[in-house]
Image 1 (cartoon, helix red, strand yellow):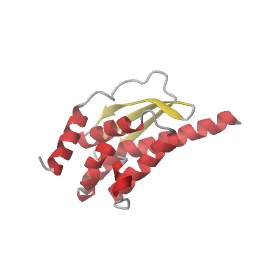
Image 2 (cartoon, helix red, strand yellow):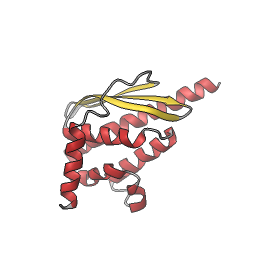
Image 3 (cartoon, rainbow, N blue to C red):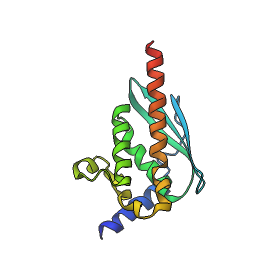
Image 4 (cartoon, rainbow, N blue to C red):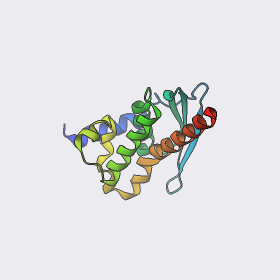
Length: 151
């Protein structure tokens, strides 16, 4: 089985998975992300305690690319600090833009590397990055909440 087939299988399996599609109990961050060009819509829910993402899930509908990308993202960020989640988001978005090519950095993305060549399909890029942009919004919101609580 070639690498492209493996990536296709990863995306297909994650797009169908419901493992990360549920209502988080006591979420501290709830952020909606919408891709108006194709109708993808997700609501990312995080429960953050002491700067660590204790639980994360998403609800919503969309194409296989957006759903798989969000599911793989959640797999990566659970148990990570907000800073680590932000870093992973930056690496993913850099990979999509073609600005991050270092294999050591890309290895941090694990299965999310399946989206590496999505930039060759411009209409699908917004689908792949939807969850990651929504995560960045949620991290920024969490940072503001943390700073406000510290005052």
